[in-house]
Image 1 (cartoon, rainbow, N blue to C red):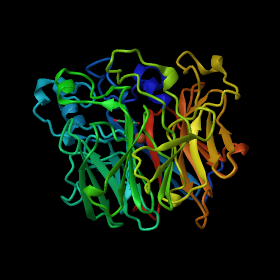
Image 2: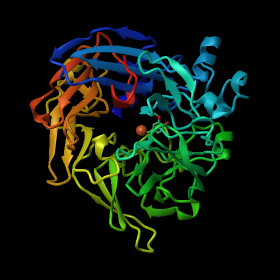
Image 3: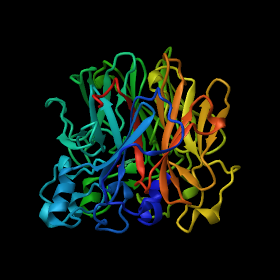
Length: 491
Ligand code: V55
Ligand code: FE
């Protein structure tokens, strides 16, 4: 997510782009596989107007969606703002009206009465496709539905009135065996509340199960995992309170004295069945996957040792410590047959990795073999001179495929002037895990343009099979997802 920090500078690749775009038949290097029929969607932030507070979190930038539609070896691009209530209000006023990340007390008085998070969310975190619908997500509000062909915003989505949480996670999970969607909202009853609502919707998108419970302390539950039988909710370290928000601060602070927790609840369980397993200080953002193993639950996740976000300050006033903002591939074991309330953790690969991990969507909830993530391979060349004055100190130059069976990592290297955003997995073939492509956007600093990489996930060492060249720089993605033409009504 290093690109997000470029965005914090609002210079170079991180400078706002502020335009919408449609490009038919994009320029391509190499050959687009003709079996690719679907679209790669991405969502990130792009400040329409500069932030009111220069030290605000870049996670507070206005949501921007883009798509690469693949069909018959050709690629069409679209880029659109997510037309949130908030963006419309800003555009009407022709200026920024909103203050710090998730703190309405810092907004312009003209919008301060619109406290409902639906009206304040920037919807800048993740695209999500389920039940034939496409959404843009941000964990502090409801989903915005987007047209999968044009990316036009259709409005917020509340599951036919059945979604009662004020918020909706950026990381719902889809069970590949049933098509069910499992999702949460935290701060479900409003800002700084410790209420969590968990929902299951069937493959038609109809809610059929709701559980309401409390978390041990109000904190950011960013991602979640499912197994065949359980839902896992990891969090740690970030804290907020009504008092903190009244003081006009950015929503989260980091409290290194707080334990991390992983909540475990049976898929068909009730509030009384929730168990919280404790661990040391950890910044638990994204997961790879989880599965059941007898009475044990196994979670693979690229968690950080400590606070990863410099713009969410330590509550004790200590300066941000970059040496602890390191993510590793971790295996977490929870023994449900034991009365212990702790989890166990093991690091599987000695090098740091990026924390934006993926698995083949066909093995979500099941024992998986391959974990995919971007990382910075320092053994690979970096042409700093050719990359220009705005290039980062290190490039995220590689995609990695970690093999849980052999403990080996295969990698794809993007080149000496390129940094990679999050990758997404595109399934291919009859369903064997790992058969498919990795796709993701690269920032080419030498040319100051964005390129979409397409690599064969089983032949990463051979380089990419194609690159889609855009004649401009794209704003940074947070997350992306592939949706096949069988999943969405694509033209
Ligand atoms: C994350 C991202 C967010 C956010 C909270 O990656 C956490 C973690 C892009 O917005 O609001
Ligand atoms: Fe995320």
